[in-house]
Length: 348
Ligand SMILES: Nc1ncnc2c1ncn2[C@@H]1O[C@H](COP(=O)(O)OP(=O)(O)OP(=O)(O)O)[C@@H](O)[C@H]1O
Image 1 (cartoon, rainbow, N blue to C red):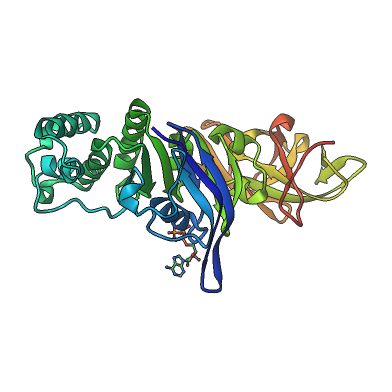
Image 2: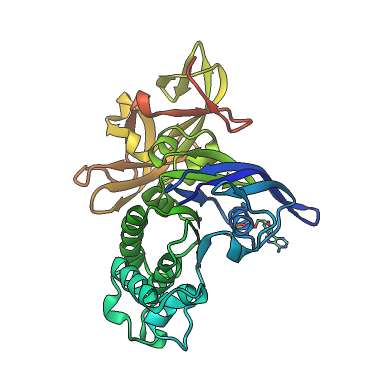
């Protein structure tokens, strides 16, 4: 077992800065997701930890050892990538045992670990199969089993589920979580999918433009995003943002007023589930343009004045397109941001 220390790691490709002094600690046995949009630097950071890319500055320490000068195979890590193809000329069992054989482990131990990894990933019945006769989801299970079979101290994963269809991804996500918890493997996991990060990770590091904007437990950063970017990146539908003007500690939205953290221009961050639809006179005035029945709730798309907004309502609510309703926000669950800097504002 091992922890990972990423200490002021920087990376530039020529004049282009991919990472600006990123620091992050992953505790022994912890699962941390690097989450962010395409190009934010998450793959670059993972590749530096793996030893597939050289940092321009800073250091990476795994299990107390500075690994900067070590090649990937000497770092005590295993990796699973989106396209980490299994070897087509080997059976599933031989694929899973590959790393162990490379380490020249005794035959009985290889067999035992292969059996154990296959059981964890629920592919014991496929051990004699050839990869060509596996589904995409089964192949990905083989890749994960192969990585876990060597009992790595650290597992690095880059979008390992993104080639799977939605249902398989959901299934595999739950299995992965259970397996990694049982194995106690320290995991760093790259994804651009916020539901995946929320579901899997003990902590999420949200990246944007080569920096980590916020690190925290999924529930904590969801409820209290440190920046407008983090608020907008987590959650589906995304957080709504309403620009308003506050004076005397109150922000006015139509005829509705809310306690604001400062006077002047402020940006309200409001999640769809944090406002209850009420009569037009009782809340934030919301003009509903489209009503989508989602089964568990109605998704309402419309606008507050000229600012777009999405809200949800109970599945049986009588709300028609074109209606003007009110939204009564839960004051305890609001976020406020500085419209200039995007930083979270705290109530005075
Ligand atoms: N080998 C390279 N040469 C030049 N620029 C690179 C190289 N690899 C990455 N970059 C640049 O560094 C930045 C970060 O890329 P990176 O792949 O880490 O982002 P990412 O968040 O993983 O995105 P994606 O999800 O699309 O892979 C991008 O601007 C990218 O174009």
